[in-house]
Amino acid sequence: MVAELIEGKPIAERMKQEVKSAVENMPEPPKLVSVLATNNPGARYYAKSQQKACGEVGIEYELHDTEIIGDRKDTESLQEYIQQLNSDRTVTGILQLMPLPDNVDGRAVQREIAPEKDVEGIHPANIGRLFYGDFSLSPCTARAVIIMLEDFGIDLEGKETVVIGHSEIVGKPSVVMLLRSVMHSPTVTCCHIATKDLTSHTKRAEVLIVAAGKAGLVNGEMLKKDSVVVDVGINRIKVEEGGKKKTKVVGDVDFDSAKEIAAAITPVPGGVGLVTTAMLLNNIIECARRQ
Ligand code: NAD
Image 1 (cartoon, rainbow, N blue to C red):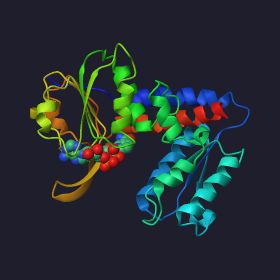
Image 2: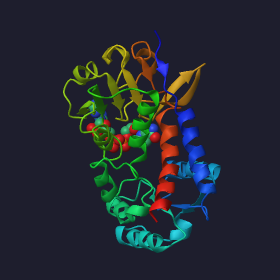
Image 3: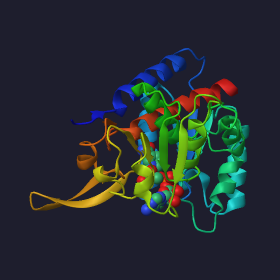
């Protein structure tokens, strides 16, 4: 049997449609401002995709790059810039693009964003709310994982669920969100770089969420039969196809071997990433609502 695909597109499209309707019912369109303090090509690419996604649903988008923010390249001056955006009533949401120069304390800059303008849901005040089951402004990727599982219709109660990765933006918030219900939560194990014998955990997992950033970390032999696999990883690898070298985007799970064992699996690309973007748009609506 080949695993069912849990595709991101239909879920993301539905979410975007909801955001579009919400925007149409607002007196003014909300505005997202992304701050870019370096010339990192990856961050610029990410900014472009944000702009495109915002445009699709009628959200205004501004990229404040070095042309606008000038030579603000240290923690304090970037924090001051964020404070200005916080008090600008025309700005609904703020996103600090990473990476920042080495001398900058990125967390300190991100923490300066007012909780009600924190579109990425990473301010300590919003992260704290997750503990009490309030996901209204939550980290986009972790929330996307939960939404995809919900959409697939899986009953998580008591299920052996393994999360690989314990980063602040994906792994840890996913664990907290999975444990939201006092009575009906899955049993969650969080594996990470120091985990011994990863396979002993993945083999038990009825639900497996992989967010490590390592192509091929998990393969079919490591899976429990008929498990549900959510692959968060995004890795660019070099492959040779038809004698030509190409760059290919793959997840952390070896899709071909995993699909033979799992009951369902999210593809990469076309899975969690699409829902993550839709979640960012959804968070802008929540920012507008809180203001
Ligand atoms: P990170 O580097 O901050 O964290 C990686 C985590 O994986 C750490 O907790 C680490 O302990 C764990 N890990 C690394 N190697 C491991 C190993 N061999 N065995 C077990 N655990 C291991 O990364 P992140 O920001 O959490 O992102 C993880 C992946 O998800 C990356 O590929 C990233 O590109 C991707 N990502 C995807 C989206 C999306 O929209 N789909 C969004 C954010 C991140």
